[in-house]
Length: 291
Picture 1 (tube, rainbow, N blue to C red):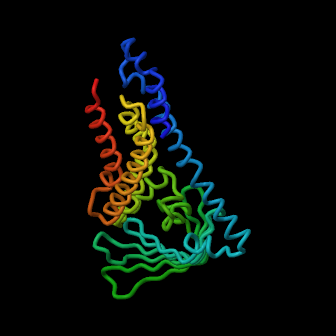
Picture 2: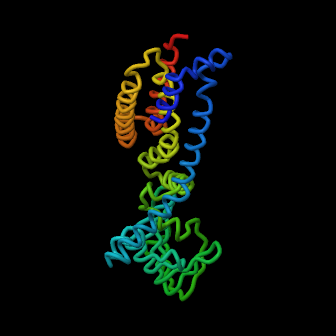
């Protein structure tokens, strides 16, 4: 709407005629608008990626813990009764405190490439220090091929090295809206390594980029509807078309994301197709403008 308003006013005041007479094209006249809109889109992306997730988490904490006095709604998914799979390991954790790098009621199941159980480690507590886990008051059970009975040995303290950190395990059920692009990318990689379906999160990952640039796409689309020989009624018609294209964009986004989450369409195509369609329409209408 801002693009349509700006260029339409320039057209009605014959400012575009003056620009065209001096040898400037419509593309050159609209370039400052597109450049500014692109900068706004980039800034919007970084704000939504770096600030919004942390602010949303803080909002949820204040609402559920401090206002509603119902901390279980904030913590249930993240820190209680967690099952987590990573490559050939499966973790079962009763409670997790990522702030203190502490887990309680930890059980780790080890599997061979054929997914046969080879080892189970049980510990009352586990502390993450450096790159190691310090386990306390537990046992190690080995399942050997040449033995019919498992071998179990208890320990008071045991140090093991694992790829996972408490923050990695905490994010297993995280909402993609509360994750940054980097966190979402790492989450997808870890789950892919564990042979888990990540389609929904891949769509969300590409959607974060595509949606950030919708302002640039819409500004580009507004250019051909801003220039008209008809000075009467063209602005109101352009505004109506603007609302119509916004509705069309949201419809395409909803359809694309639904198809992407269901695996019908590739995640990249599901996120970027609405932008591509609207940009194609903008180019089509620009080519139809009379010089």
